[in-house]
Image (cartoon, rainbow, N blue to C red; front, side, top):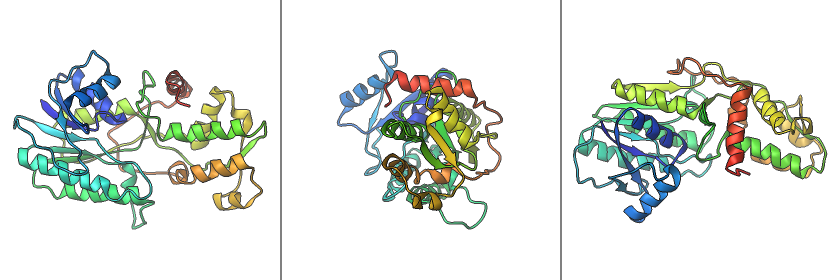
Length: 317
């Protein structure tokens, strides 16, 4: 197939590119750049000289629908997205509007990547502007008259084999916040509320391969890409800190976030709390989702070592 791919410079989009290439598909990326030379330079920095891109499409999807001279495409995979909990300003909605116009013009299926955290089993409120924006984008896709599918991954972490990931977001940001607190603590123990619950993390290549398999099977509808057996949040953080030799510097205490904020916190603890309170909803409680396309994946100590080793090799701090 000849496939238009957005978000190729992101974590999931880059892994989808590798998966598509292994299956023999032709990929034409949509890139936000000044010109083709600039676009190819960006791609070269990520994929190296071994990958060539005979065709690229230059477009800023937040502001315009791309103009495509060729009509010979089989589908669009839309991975580009803005992850921002506040003031996202409907940017994901605008991108979906513009990529949908292109899919309609070409009369080809649109495969859209959303997030598992838009799922609600009841009428509870969305947690932030990001979730509202993503569900708004999904609504546009579900109303299209062309074939479509939506993929809802959970928190994506490094490649299951190599630990590779392009952008150190999510898990890496949380771990980095703990490391910074320990380093600024002057040898004192960093206290933090006990994580009561699980974190639904999934290796990014596992999600990418599942998406490509679904597309090759002409998937239609909504598909969840979540870890059926997610690790406990406390285990995830403490195992990571232990591998870094910092586990003795952090103590989880039995109190709520509200109670924690009222105790006599050190400056490093205050900074850690103020940063992580935005992530807490995704790292506490039990997140249940409908049946996942992922039937098994191993999040063990060896995997934690892989993703930390890769991050350290890239000087992620």
